[in-house]
Image 1 (cartoon, rainbow, N blue to C red):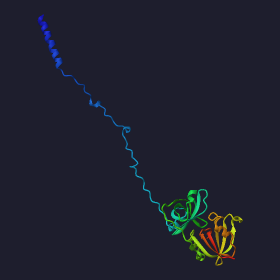
Image 2: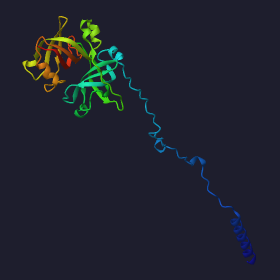
Image 3: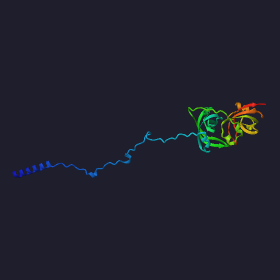
Image 4: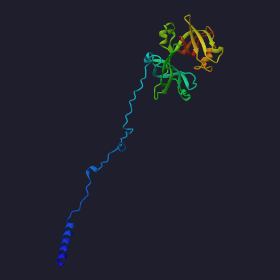
Length: 268
């Protein structure tokens, strides 16, 4: 019996020793089961350009025309000019019609877009830059549908009257080359005056004689109204009087100067 117990004890000791000496197994994770995270489009940040990184398109400078370039430009095309105010008609409905001249030629700006406040600043000699459409009406070449800006720090210019008396015997082409200029005609004889609508308070149509030929002039009411000296003087003219006339060489189916001053040099 003792031998049997001894054998059993020995077996138990051997089994206990084996159990203590076996290494513990560490579970392995198969490589194929390991998922690598993939970045989606939503996870990728797109760099945003700042204002400093955006290049502004180059702005070409405005090409200001000479008077010669303006004359050569086709009708119904855009023109840009710099010129000097000589006078303007009455402001109305955010528009004003302006007589302008530069040393190289003159311009007629028809119904230029203008506030009443800016119209009061359009004094003779003031320099402005005008953008508009070159047009023609009854032979008068003008800038239409125009806008303008004052040329800050610009010089001033007031034209002296050009003696155009000799042009009365010139060809129409020679006369029209001075269109819209400030001019004078000397030694003209009064033929007749006629009030538009038959009485004072509107334009005055003036017919003058020179060398036996008739020439049509006009006192433009919106330029020189009934309260001006020239309107009063012309209203009292008598046929046969000799006068000197200053005017802007406007055109309407031929020469039709807008009178700004009349001096009677030989009255009855």
